[in-house]
Amino acid sequence: MYIPARMPELPEVETIARALRPGIEGAKIDRVEFHLPRLVEGEPTDLVTYLRGRRMQKLIRRGKYLIFELDRGAFIVHLGMTGQITYSPASYAENADFRRTVTGLQKAVGVHPVDKHTHLVLHLAGGARLLYRDPRTFGKLIPVPSGRWDENPRIAKLGKEPLEGSLSVLAADFPASSSRAIKAVLLDQAFLAGVGNIYADEALFAAGIHPATSTDSLKPDQVTCLLQEVRSALKRGIKNQGTTFSDYRKPDGGKGGNQERLLAYGRGGEPCRRCGSLLKKTVIAQRGTVFCPACQKPPAKSRPVNTR
DNA sequence: AATTCGCCCTGTCGGC
DNA sequence: TGCCGACAGGGCGAAT
Image (tube, rainbow, N blue to C red; front, top):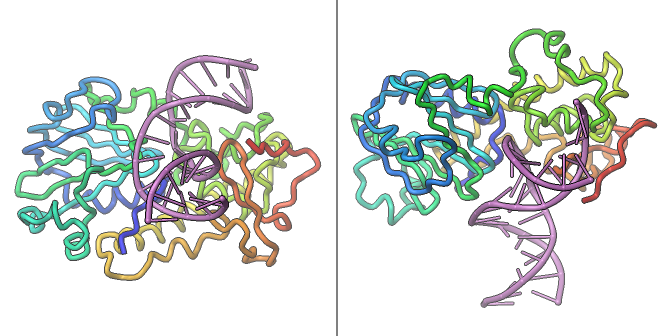
């Protein structure tokens, strides 16, 4: 069964970066197929010309972004909601039936299908391919001719990397006087780069903090605890998603274990694994939010739950 | 100035 | 069976 990676957040993107590096760092792009210009942000919009002949020198992850440093310029990729990047080794490249018998062959070789959602194909020297697939097309493909990817507005506004530095360094950026719901702050990429809906819910659950809690009402030790749980959730995610990713390359194996390890996200209506209460699902900061009404008590001063 | 809202997009799912 | 609306949501820019 083919299980697409959903909602790539820091752990998923990190996993992808780690898996791609051995195959692509140093690889030259011989030929480019590209079919969906609106995925491109900035100039030049002609990715075929921009990428053809380039050599990929280094792959960096920053927040949820992948950054390909090229021999000339750089190339930033954001996977949006449903973006997938797959490395297809040279040994798979010359299968004439690949396009037509997508499902069967995909099972056989363990790469994702080349179909109408595959918008970018990089043919690498030696026959390997790098495929970008994105059904909902929320992803972004961003050429940076100058190579100064850190000056790109999207990257420049990102906050700190949650897994780097000490907790107190991270806490220094915490918007302690903000009246926003704490979940909105966790999702704010200008505070921490890479935390998304899944890991925000997981961290809040682990810290026992209600997602609607007004940020300025949190005590310093709660903040520290929460940041610790953010890190822990992300690290656990990298561990688990790594497992899922290898299943993804070999889909014959069973389901990834990540789904079953989540304590909050996606478990609305199911019993809390800590206390047995039924988890609640609501909308906070425009996002589906799951929490335990018993373990994550709303404090007296909480923001009204926005029910869209 | 800070915060919230609307929008982009398409596969999936529940209801009738 | 098939149609249809609701839903999923990251991040930007407009509105409040």
